[in-house]
Amino acid sequence: MASYKTEAIIINRLNLGESDRILTLFTPTKGKIRAIAKGSRRTKSKFSGHTELFTLCNFIITTGKSLDIVTDSDLISNFLALNPDMESVKTAYFMAEVISKLLPDEQPNEEVYNLSLWCLKNLGTSETNLIRLIFVAKMLKIFGIYPELSKCIKCEGKPDEEVVYFSKSAGGIVDKGCSLHFEDAIRTDKDVVKLWRYLADGDYRDLLKVRPDPQLSQTTSGLALEYLKCMTMIDYRSIRVLS
Image 1 (tube, rainbow, N blue to C red):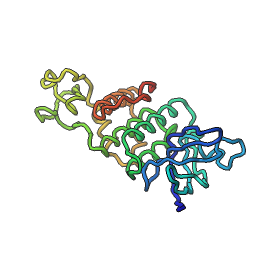
Image 2 (cartoon, rainbow, N blue to C red):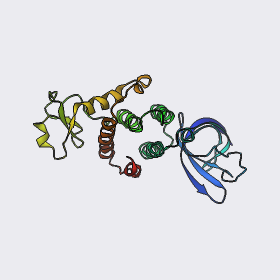
Image 3 (cartoon, rainbow, N blue to C red):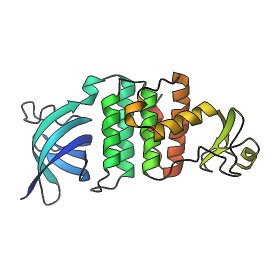
Image 4 (cartoon, one colour):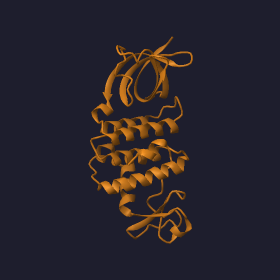
């Protein structure tokens, strides 16, 4: 049987039998794969600490008939051990659910992998709503479902007022007059739109320099989450527990 090496983030796990686990691994070159870590639930397992959720490891994996088998692992980082606060945990579960539901198995997406890795590394080092918003904003870009945030989606004019309207069904912002055409148009302000747009387009090296008002990042994050649900037509369970 052939073996291969890969770096991977553990985004899900299921108990199997009395001592094994099935791991869902998000890798940079193979995408999302599943592999059995035999005996990993035993106290003296060689995989002790290497099968925790949201850990980054180097794995050696043997190709199996139905599922691949983890034969060795080397822990690189346990992100939630470094940042164990509840909001970081909830955000990590949210990211894992989005990856699980939007990415097909065994379809590599290096952009999503690098984004996920960056967000996990920075959980706890910045305001959590900001990290969550960066993840959502850039995921929408990657998947080609980013909203129109520069001009009115209906008349294509640029709103002059500080207050604008956002319609998730229309796919972007609308000015006051055009908002009458969309039942779900909600009032917001330009700072929300500016923050969303900056984080979607910004370079990773600059994103953590942003220090928005916590209320602004929370409002923008909530709007982006609702838009994500609308555009993907998925009810993410993890969103229900986010602050």
